[in-house]
Amino acid sequence: MKKGSIVRIIVFCLLLFGCTAVTLILPEKEFSVAENRELQGKPKLTAKKLKKGTYQKQYESYLNDQFFLRDDWVRLAVGMQALLGQRDVNGVYLGKDGYLLEKHEKADFDEKQTEDNVGYLSRFLNEAADLYGGEHVSCMMIPTKAQVLTNRLPDFAEVPDQDRVLDSLRSRLNRPEMLLDMESELQKHQQEYIYYRTDHHWTTLGACYAYAAWAEATGQAVAHEPGYYRRETAFTDFYGTTYNKLPVNVEADRVELFHSPGETGVRVVMDEGEAVADSMYFKKEAAEGFNRYNVFFSKNTFQIEVDTKARTGKSLLLVKDSFANCFVPFLTEEYERILMVDYRYGKAPVGRILGQHKEITDVLVLFNTEKFMQNTKLSKLADTEIRGQTLEEFRMEDFLE
Figure 1: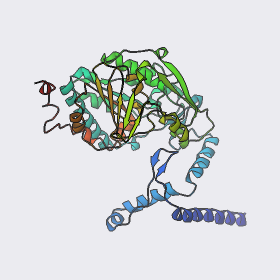
Figure 2: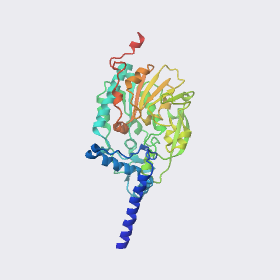
Figure 3: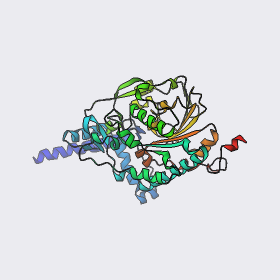
Figure 4: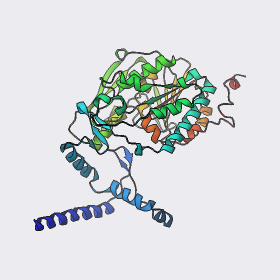
């Protein structure tokens, strides 16, 4: 027994130090496709960082992220935990009917950051309402999968209350009706396929139901039932980011496209003209990569313009995260232009964008609640100054004189 223990310790040490040595030799990886996030690079050693302890933390993250065959070790570990009957593995609940649901704890959210974001967004919405009229401004906060699909959660699962964030936001709005309740609307359809089993995003069907609710609440569009659209299954082999945290034996997701007359003749311009396309769907790019959800606009980037054949005289500013990518095609029958802005990838003040795009008539904010709370780059959303004026001082009549 003693000799066997010694052999196991030796083998463990050889693996640990061997893999660490290989990690230090191999080129760094900048991005994890499986986890859909940037990886920690080797930190620069400075006396200030060393004294504060940040260097040690960054170096630990660096070794964790760059560790040789890291993804394979993670898969092996979480697979064993799942086989042992655990229902909460690597921050994911193994739910009912093959659903993998992200576990969110209070520690996952910085309260100050959340408070700051509520302030940034409420200021933007209030001043946008002053400029365009409250009936032309709306905000959709899309709940997490665990908040909606409570019927798929394991019995012991706890879901953090994110309603307090929405209550705080609503209390700061001059027109509280601008904030739409998406949780109760989506829960009406919780028996349907409205969120992917293996990914944190909603499905196109979920976005369709949300679009109809938004159209009815705002009066800015015609609400259509799912049967109005021609549905196409683009992929049947989608395993999303949640699956990569808990790679267990579950059925792959399918990705659907909902086609409407409005998508005919669209022109998509990304990154200020660096890429131009005649479709919102990028099947080839999505098929070549890991993330099938990238069939919608191929990627996340700071600014995307979609020009349509709608001829309605209306243009929309859509401040968004990735949940909006499958939502935008539903808007193409209502708006001649849709300007999509994602502040995770750019820093231009929103006031500058509004000043450059005088054609804007409507504003929609669409965020996933969890991603909104964790976003660290929303300060420019509150920078609403246009040519020396704030939105509160600015009036559309100035252009008509």
